[in-house]
Length: 226
Ligand code: CA
Figure (cartoon, rainbow, N blue to C red):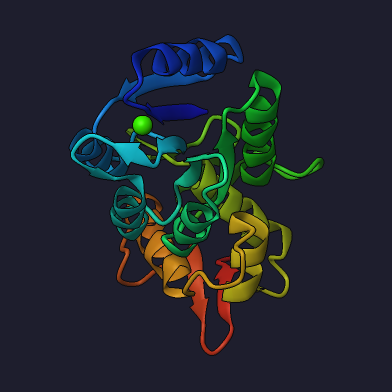
């Protein structure tokens, strides 16, 4: 996965970078709230480790801004011990998970591995699909149409897998939230709609008239070809 580390304490930041890189992930890091918002809102990451106390602002506000722009990004908050309040605020601001400082390497890696499992395939799912002139390589997270290759995020790939797995019946927004986000229950369903809109802009010939991820009125979404 591509991981963004947001931590202002230099020793901890470099320890986090080394730890995550050691597991084979690509890592970038930033140390303040503005850089975190800018990097987090870009399309370059699958997961962000986000400290709460940052120079220039609160990690909670950063989380809220990033969630609005990138509904598919997996956000893990790094909160201080005993700060129940920050956990609640973090989850309310759209974080997917949190770890409490000080945390051990194994605990953090377990959370990242759990995020990766949520974002990647269940055994037996198709990894390469072709539909409506678009080739989807879900293992590598790329969509190709003619010679145009576009990167997909891990969450977008997870959505496509789920839609394909249930291609005979379609998938509701709540199912998507539950299975792709594992949402704590209060994430708005428009999170799903915004992510689908982004995904369509990458894979559909004409995103305003989708033929791969089609809308099923009153239900949710379905894979284009039954
Ligand atoms: Ca800090």
